[in-house]
Image (cartoon, rainbow, N blue to C red):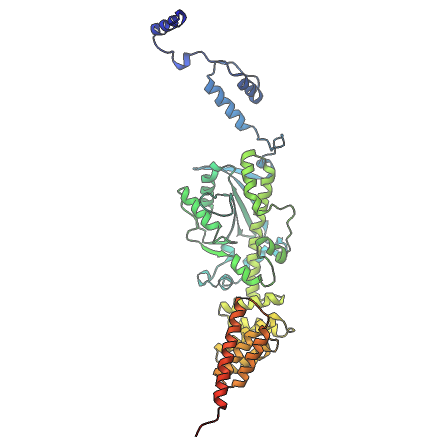
Length: 456
């Protein structure tokens, strides 16, 4: 062992133990740390702080600085772009945006006054759910969420929840926004406090997405879900029933363009919203996120206007396009409102021949058949068959074979049906052709037996 190392060991043995942490000399800050400290809080101040304390001071200073937007310059924070406010509760803090419009305000072509002048039974008629009878839109909350993913699941969170409701002469609107992941408990608590006592909600596809997602988030945060007992009117399926025959898409934005006349300019595509939120959390640039909040605001306003329009159509029969008239008649028929439904079908009988008119003839024939009015049903089928409709021809073949016992008329209907389906393809068509062939063979056999000369 060298003499120098031995001397060092002897000095350590003679010492009374290591110095307390606070009495140890503070090491000089590394050059890189000094530069960072100078950039964040000015020139480093050698005030005897420990390395840990110096790092804590640097972290706090960095948190107060706006993050860069990726282009080298900090973007404006969301608070400077929107007139919102920070809300604190027992679970922390979140950001709240509030707004309202007068009920006379038009959203596209629809005023919000329609929300308070509707038959409460219209929702039950639209959905076919008796439990939604007397569903008053004036007492409902219209809800839409923006989430960190579009597939749902426990890993998906609702970072923004927009709600709207009628209050007096105003349509009130609130958006609950979590600026970072740790603000979710406060957002959920604030939303629950405001929705306490809510008995009715309206969503667009909320039955499959928004409501189950929120329910999951409340459960994960050990909070009571405030909408557990609320009656739920999901507009998606009624909208499809009313407008799918005319519109290629029944997405919310497609409906608002076609029915309300609302055209969004510079809107954020829904599939980009999760990425925008992740980027906001990372960079704190509020510009793109402000567009997301505007997207959510328009979603809630359009949801309310479309719900009012759908109910108005059911209540007053305001459909004009022939395809819409037919869909409205079907909705009324499903709700067992047969007189009102037949009134809509008969509107279509005054039109020129076409697919919608033929479909109306078949529906009226089915109603007459169910009511035992076979003469009326046959007249409708014969009129539809003149246009070559194979469903009408099949019904005529059935009727003439089993009721009127007119086998030649039944065979004629079968031959016309086979001629109509010649060259057609598809599973439904194949089954129809097989049915017609089977029926033809049976009818030919019956006719053969009928004309067979008697023996003896």
